[in-house]
Length: 479
DNA sequence: CACCCGGAAGACCT
DNA sequence: AAGGTCTTCCGGGT
Image 1 (cartoon, rainbow, N blue to C red):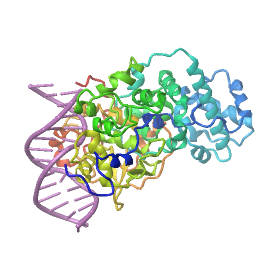
Image 2: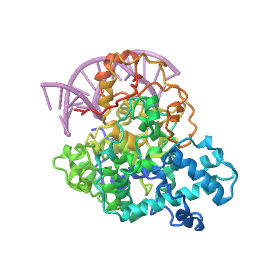
Image 3: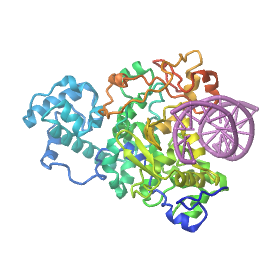
Image 4: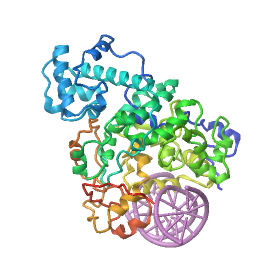
């Protein structure tokens, strides 16, 4: 344990700890998942109140929750909106997507697709979503269906399209609201209702449910589905985070961290290490919240990416001196204090000798899985290629591996991941569009983190293309 | 010199 | 026992 001398007083010292932020009140996942202004989260007021009334005026054929609309419904909605708001004709071709995808579009996206009407559409959608959420909330809690959690197995394919996570940013703060908890809860529940699966089309293209990924990227998932689809995280995060605001089991689960960080509520570690890493830890707490929750691994800061996400999305921004978003929309973040962050990570994992060099090695392993990418030219800058939701699902990546048998793996098209300049893509989870999304083939599809698989493919270095078989994703049990 | 990159081996968990 | 996820080391490149 060489404590890093740097600015960051290492671990054990109380002082150092002072610097350590508190535990996250909730798991950031939510943010990703429920980005849009969900009722509670956001501001209470919808852009324009008058719009509220429109809900009742929607064509009767339209489900009240826009996230469950199919393409036709979207078209119907657009037509209705054109009439109702007397806006310019909308190019429906620009909205070849389902409701979920449309809900993911940002105001800007909508404006681009429907010049002059974007704001209106955005406002209306937000209202509808909120209403739907509120409604859900009142409904008896539907069991969180497993499906919700893993609506789609990851498609091997998920390439990371350029993620556009802006959504998140929007309500970060609001998360604290108590609502968040409940919201999360029923959002999850709600998930059922939403069409998680991004259109088949996606699948077709991508070949797997991964659109999830794709979408995810496009943040689709979250927002809407996030609610649903990605229910998975919800479990974690929501549970913990939300409700008990303030206390969470999240990031700093580390025993040590735990102990060090006073405010960290965290479940008592059973054993030092365990605490740090075992998901079980949660079980006690949050998990129960979601009984049916599936098997989804609750990483809760146990995994590096999750840990980073939690710090990055800390609503209170307590970790910005360690790590901060450079561009949340694209998932680009910067490690402000490498040594300090490594220390935190070390605490989290109970590896007190952790340093940036080691931690960065772990980060590099994420390259091959397309979880992360290095932002070239900028020191300590990385980019998440997947949102938390996806990442959680990624757990199943092992499955992917199976799927992509070596045979399937076609040689890495591009030996090196092109560092694409990421420009935020519209959040759309269009059914088929998704696949197209990523222009550059990031063909390096996610692979598993495990070293073994790659070995075979090792030649390929880090990209393994998973040929996404269009179909059956990974459903299988993963061991 | 500080980063950054991956290979290799092994530890620790689940 | 096997597999996943790092952790540790390390040589090499920029």
